[in-house]
Image 1 (cartoon, helix red, strand yellow):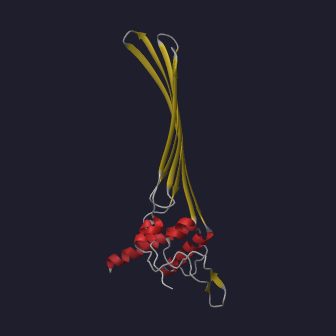
Image 2 (tube, rainbow, N blue to C red):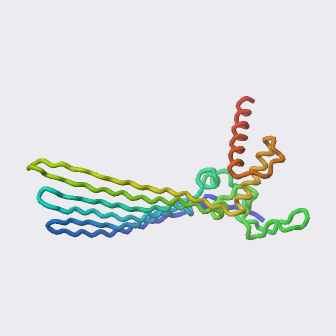
Image 3 (cartoon, one colour):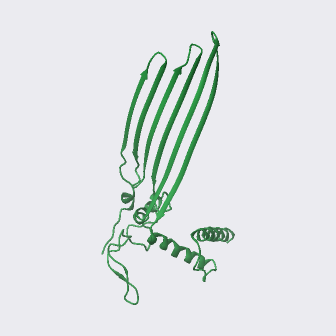
Length: 231
């Protein structure tokens, strides 16, 4: 069966941008008020990558008397970045280099081991080489940012052409990065780690944490690069 997968076409697409804004203002002799709402949905050319942002802002100024004004500004926003792997970590870089056209997206046939047990069905993602589609579909990566900027100011005019202004501000930001990987993807990365560990002289080390795995992999790669430079 001939396979000719266009990995770049499977990785990139057309991103659409939507933006909605609503604002209103109100004013009297003593009070001035402005408020706005906004929503942005930004698609990206990488399939699965998008950014959504919702925002609210209000400004108010109140004239207490002829010499004293008080103003308040409140801005609240939340952004959600739906992320995908980039470059050679399983994204477009792999699609442009290591993911060969002869590699399929899914296993074309049922795969058995030496004892006749089923390893893969035709609907399973192909995992015998780089597969950017598999990497993208088996991983959920979301970065959520919440930010609130608040300011209060007091302006006092003791005499003509002179004013004194006092400010108070509070800026709060919470950034949360959440990554979930399907067990099939985690197991594949763990198997790759075992192979690297074995090549580095740890053939019996099969039980380890993902963090330790990554640290040892980096160490092995650094040793391998150093050996190449010395050779």
